[in-house]
Image (tube, rainbow, N blue to C red):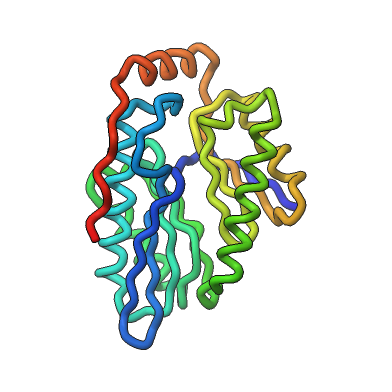
Length: 217
């Protein structure tokens, strides 16, 4: 099992899908749900911004890549976008990255798309189950602030995102790597000092809890 360390970010779980002609085009925006979680280290405003970015980028990719045989997931954390999934060529992968990086309010893009056939429903279900196992392992690990770490699972690779200390980052990656079925762990953390983390937690706790608007149907 291979462990990769990269200092980037993302977010997790609301899906938007689109189909185009005979070529399946599925682009999903993945977020934490419609209710903003008060224990998240991000402010409620930043959480809403990330959800909005995810939906916006997903829609822009859908329009730009219509007609291609692809499956793309979009995640955002602190306005940094993570793209995972499958595309049919390196050119389409590069174009997806350019579309995402040019989207409003996006600061940086982590393009983890692979050139392959779109994953099957069964494979995506297995990924969801694997992600749930990693989450359960985090809940049972005292050293991890599990409510401040987002998990994205794609092709049995675990992407970990959030604002954490170096110790939290190392422990989270180690715990995730030991979950049966995990092929690879990619750390996309914003590593900060304990003092910086505490200031961010205090700011998030003092902000009012907000409910994000439901995505357009």
